Length: 395
Image (cartoon, rainbow, N blue to C red):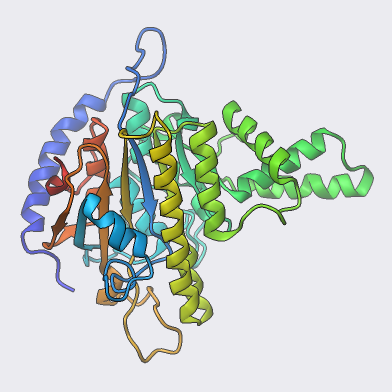
């Protein structure tokens, strides 16, 4: 697939401007009395990673969609970019972790596992995420910048901050996931003296191993106090055995709904992933996953519309992490690792205050434009992004 011929000159001009703007971020900032940042009043932004990789055919094509709420009900309420792509330049991989970071940072990078593991996806971004930009610009606590993550992708637990020297862990987001709940629960059970002897030693070892997965914690292993309180509420409601709470992407929807009620996030990214179960070989796993995400989006939109603080003050940005292969002859359908054209072909949908309604954009745009567009909506500088703002969507 050939990249948009007009993109590179625009990109160079944008980078020149961004380089000049970067100087404005070069002094220390924080929440001290001397440098208190302004409060943030909105709009809030909810990024929906329509994840696990999806094709346009089963999502935004009205004749073949498994996402009728998005494709037919929401379509007229926002701006649909029908021809978004992951660029085909060298080293742009069409997979979940990479696509997530392209969305969050606004830059294509070649990512390698920090431990050198083959097929590992423990990645570190070299430029800031949108969470870091927000927290460095406004007085927003980390628990109001959230990633809602799936239980099967623990490597994505740690995409909450970059290694950029002007940003980083000081401006990180929080993460809600079943993995984080299990860590919280095990700590609490040990503190409550649930086990003794060999059983306790085994549980302590299990906790150390779980904590060791957070390879970037730098000693900060506890989540913020409001998140700890969130997990305590979750424990009282759903219990400890995991047999009561939803699973898969339904769990992500539930966690997101709870976060809106109890943590009141300003910026949130929910990383849906159920369509990726097509790797098991059954096409219905893929199409059912799309339907589950579509149902989740309906619940999230309904929750926002029912909440006075979020209603008319929340922008939704929906975008896949990657596309999927369209080859009808391979034994396992809809793969995404072969760098085929359709694996680069995605879309984006924006909806909310300040977003134009009933607009469909046909020309090609890039996935890395999402971060700059979020910055535009939230009135914050995103100096290290490389994709231009999706201007057609802005009212």
